[in-house]
Length: 262
Length: 296
Image 1 (tube, chains in turn cyan, red):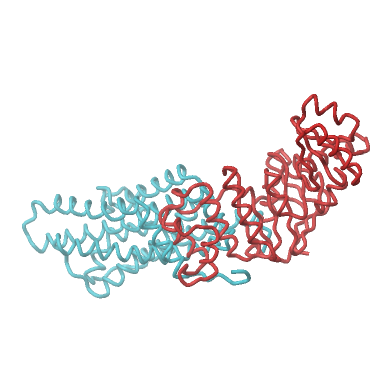
Image 2 (cartoon, each protein chain N blue to C red):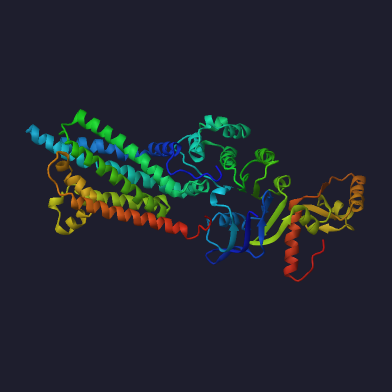
């Protein structure tokens, strides 16, 4: 191992991170069971009195796609932040760094593992949707954009979770901050009863800054291939990518303060 | 030279945890025991070398952090999977395809533990797990920080014996931090004695022993009868329950031992006793600070 440069991505590390993800009970509860249960209950409730099959299909698809946003939020944001904070408390990242596994390598493998895991979860989610709900089939472009949007959101949320947990270093404060962020995102994105159109203008201003807002309100339009203004959505993604980048840089800066060995 | 330390100071808030004012050089192939009581600064020294704590002063080395292996006092790993997968991820290898790793697993009798999760391992198994990972690094410089702390006597002895045997005839430099002086006696050739963050003594064990203890020491129980028996002999500082006698030459040794044998007394003869050496080195430092010359 001496003098050997460690690769950013290795099969062993990828499998390690995949096992780490699947070994986290939060992920199964909030990332898989909850969206399935939520979409089933909400769609049944909302469409109970709808008799028009086309309208039922539209509503089901719209709600189903919107609730899909919960998957990366629960797995990448809450799940990873919880795991990372627990690891920080135990000094595991420091131990791994002493074996030459730098934080950037961990993050790199974690991102790859999370993307694989999220893709599998979305496949399961859609299998459930197709079996138990009336969903509208997507246009090819719609399916591609939906997938890219979810994966990009996953990466951004992972970096944010990594940054928060690395800065706070303790499970309690990290979980508190991440839960506040999770429910704030849900509330301002129109996922908790108050839709974007019914929000006061001040709240709408905040909602416009969140990628999750567009994934909730515009995703059906994108899914079925209707015309949609992508610029605000892309801008919100860029804004959150910058926030994630700042958090990562801050984490690296804190470490660089006293790490003098090359 | 692998590593040199000069004017190293580590502060935790207002408290100075480490203040090394004399140069410390670690050469290739050296085996150094770092000893001292709680709060002496042993772990702080290791952490500062690894860049895990902020410090002032100079630590010079051509080694990168990846070339310094370390077994910390407390090592934790993910508990979401059997340790086998953690081992393979850290070492970027498959156990089934790595002969050297298989050899180490066999050497440390760790095969049966591979399917267990980290928290399910016993204290000794946890230590052996990290030791295997550390040894696989084959680093030019390796630190073992309190590798046997919390282990029972038998496990401790067995583990240190295995470590000593493994490193015999190897050229790696080792720095072993320990509370248990006896386990260092067969493993190290140099000592760094720390006390309250300061260097008490640093040098070859034999030289330090000669300087602070003499050619050899005779150690016996501190009883009134023994006190009377050896009252005219040169005494060294020792733990309260022991009497340590300094012998500068062979005739000294013969005289004391024959007297003890004649009275059927139990004693221990040593020319490497690190505990007695450490106590007397500290005493010498204290006397120096008081302006008194140390005469063993």
